Image 1 (cartoon, rainbow, N blue to C red):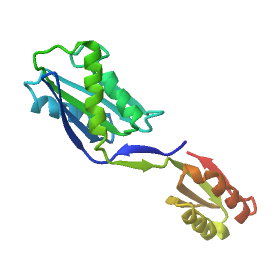
Image 2 (spheres, rainbow, N blue to C red):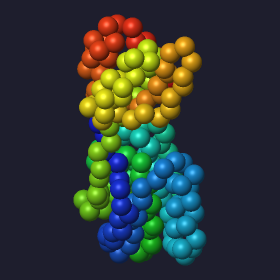
Image 3 (cartoon, rainbow, N blue to C red):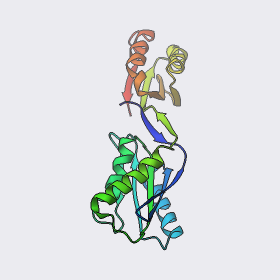
Length: 202
């Protein structure tokens, strides 16, 4: 699990190709529903457009949680897939791209459409603001009461977060931890608790 980037702010961009106008909109999204809401929003706003093509991708673009696209009446494979390809290559995770096309009377042909839709999203991506996300692990750590404060201290050293606490025979701590810190955290935890701590992943 490595770091990946996500889109953090909306982008609007406009290009013209052989009299056809391409309006591109990029939006950060939290899930598929939000992607579909934006797509419907632009369909309603540009009712008179010839095509409203779209693509979205959730999570790390190299191993996406989910992704989808639509050519919206353009020849198959000439709009949605090239748009998704740009989102993947430019590592715009958690993003939806919508391209609204007004046909200008000159046919672009399949190759021309692929280039036009790719360029539309690519140029918008040049303006995109991205942020880096570190994957987080959820773990449950079980320790003796005497070690609880040491574990809390260790957690803060590794930019971890305490999500919950349960006291029974021992202390159960629900924590989240940057994935990159897991190995170091576990080995130090074993040291400070003399091997008595147990760790389970969620």
